[in-house]
Amino acid sequence: MAARMFQQFQGTLEKGVVSLFANIPIGGTGAVGTLVASKNQGIKSVVRNSTGNYTISFGDSIQGSLDKYVRLLNLNSSVVLGSVSTVSAIQVWSDDAATGSITIQVVSPTAAGNTAPVVADPDNGAVIILCIKLKNASV
Image 1 (cartoon, rainbow, N blue to C red):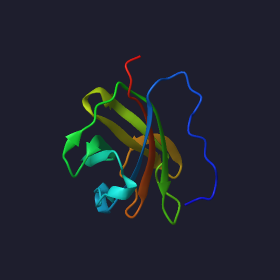
Image 2 (cartoon, one colour; image 1 turned 120 degrees about the vertical axis):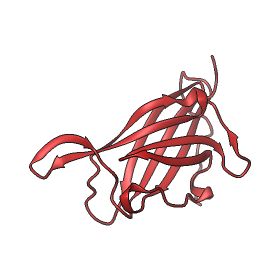
Image 3 (cartoon, helix red, strand yellow; image 1 turned 45 degrees about the vertical axis):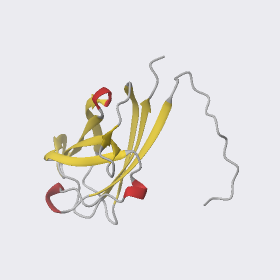
Image 4 (spheres, rainbow, N blue to C red; image 1 turned 90 degrees about the vertical axis):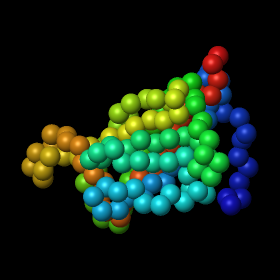
C-alpha cells in the first residue's frame, strides 16, 4: 500500500459519485478471461456480445446481486499489452446503468494505411483497464 495521506473527500457538484475499476483479461477471438474478484470489485460480470462489444454488469458475482445506478458519469479506458495494441478507442455503446450495466465497443483502424474506424476484438493477451464513474444518488 502507498505510504501517502490521501484525502477522503472529492470536490464535485455531483452527489453520490461511485468509482468502479475493471481489469478484463482478453483471450483469443476477443473472449473474456476469468475475472479476478479483487481486481473487479463491483463488477458482477463481463460478457462478449459480438466483435469487440462487451456488456459489463455491476454487482457482486458471489452473491449474484445486481447494482443499479442513476446514471453513468464517465468511462476512462486503457489497454495493457506488451506490444502495440490494435485498439484505437473504447467507446460507450449503451448506458444502461439504471438497469445495472453498460456496454462498451472496441474500435480499431481499418488497416495500416486506412485509419477509418471499425469494430474489432482486442488483441489476444490484452487486458482492458476501466475506471467507471457512476452516480448513486437521485439528487
